[in-house]
Structures are given as structure tokens and as C-alpha cells.
Length: 115
Image 1: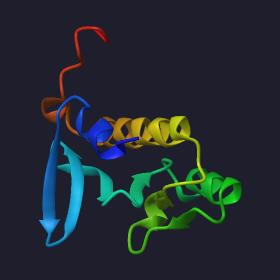
Image 2 (image 1 turned 180 degrees about the vertical axis):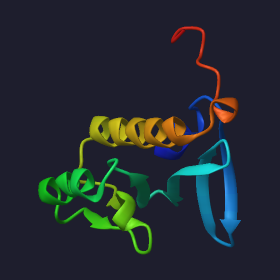
Image 3 (image 1 turned 180 degrees about the horizontal axis):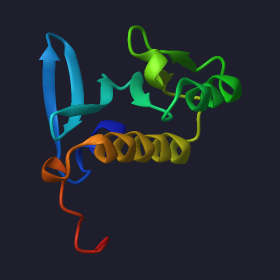
Image 4 (image 1 turned 60 degrees about the horizontal axis):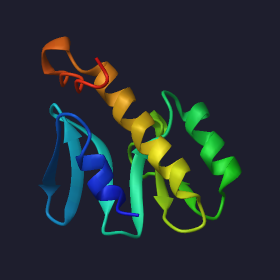
């Protein structure tokens, strides 16, 4: 499964490299996914650290708290061992959480099928 392509296909999503070697997916000017070259992905897994900790409890071998921003609900997910549909749902949640915090003027327009 190409999770990077899935993330970048979200409305308004763009690829960026804010720091050398760190590839991310942004919406507006905010990161919603850290794209880890096919082995990991960093996502906002909850509105709070407590919500994101549910991933740690379910997948202790594949999920860890992201350095620096983990206290805000961000986890690093090692791919493999977690069903693809759960990763896709986590990308959706991360995207939705970030979009909800954007000013209305910077939010992407919903696709015709979602309107």
C-alpha cells in the first residue's frame, strides 16, 4: 500500500521537505503526516496525548511517541504488522484534526462527492 500517495491525494495536500531529508504532507501550511520512506509514518493520532496512547496500547511493537511533538498526540507508526485499513483511517484522522485547526480561509474545499 502506498500510504504516501494516499496522504498526498487528500484535498489540498502538498508534499514538502521543510528540513533536509524530512518529507511531509501538508494541508494549508500545517503538516499532517511525516512520510518515512515507506518504513514509518508520523501521524497525529488523537487530539490529545491520551487519545494517541490508545495506539501505543494496541500496537506496542509498531508505535512510539514522536520526539518533540508527541505530547500533542503525534506517534511514529512502523509499517508492517498493522492492517492497512487502520493506517488509512489514521491518516484520515490526522488530516481531519489538522484541517479543523486551520483558519476557515485556509481549509481546502471539499471534493464534489463530499459536498
